[in-house]
Amino acid sequence: MNYRSVKEETYLPHKHISLLGKELYLYREVTSTNSIAKHMAKYGAGEGTIVMSRSQSSGRGRMQRHWSCPPGKGLLLSMILKPEISVQFVPQFTLLTAVVVAETIKTVTGFRAGIKWPNDIYINGKKVCGILAESSFSRAKIEYLIIGLGINVNLSIHHLPPDCQDTSTSLSLELGQNVSRIKLLKQFIISWDEHIRGFLKAGHPYLRSKWIENNVTLGQNVTVNKGNHSINGLALDISEKGGLIVRLSDGSLHEYLAEDVSLRKINK
Ligand code: BTN
Image (cartoon, rainbow, N blue to C red):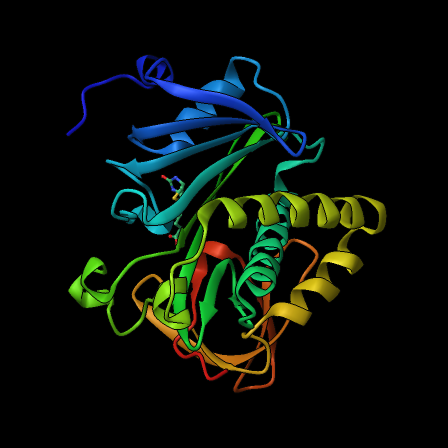
């Protein structure tokens, strides 16, 4: 349990630098970079500010899961966004981040990284990165959006929890050599700037085409988990809201949003 308040944490020793036009706050250890970024966003930090830490004591994943990574072995960062959108379009930004991460990994390592809907990144059938978006809104308008991502960069097999060793991996495990975290960070910023420009100019069609180019989900048989029952279907497309369009065995089409679906199998 960590009793330090997030406000106090923001004053922990850190470096504040500018990198490729982004304000960057680098910490050694925090509870969660998403928590720090939220606090900074609330008190005025601008669009594009990035909070990074070598380690986190209470890293968060989706569905209330814990995200763990040994110190200095991953790229753990959160970016502050303040888009003028209504809350229903938030999932588009997580899809865009998944595109950016997949392309970043491809550029830096040469691996084809694939997006498993909604926002996990896979290499060779194993998860290498997770994305967690958290937002604050008032009257359905976004005040700020925090995009947090954790890339497993230089983890060895024994760094992964035993129950994840068959399903997760790291860039170094796949590549057979360590990967520079700063190189990844720089490429992430470059790719982000490229794709956010494309998205703001051309909207959903741009996002959809980039997402499709990088995904390993569409055309796969998926299992939709809904409460205590599950439904099988074929993943067909993504919707404007960032949902997954699935065709069920009776031929009907359904849109599922992030909370409702997990995919059972990655074949590519
Ligand atoms: C998931 O796959 O469930 C999402 C994992 C997101 C983890 C990152 S690590 C940096 C940022 N800070 C957090 O507490 N979580 C995200």
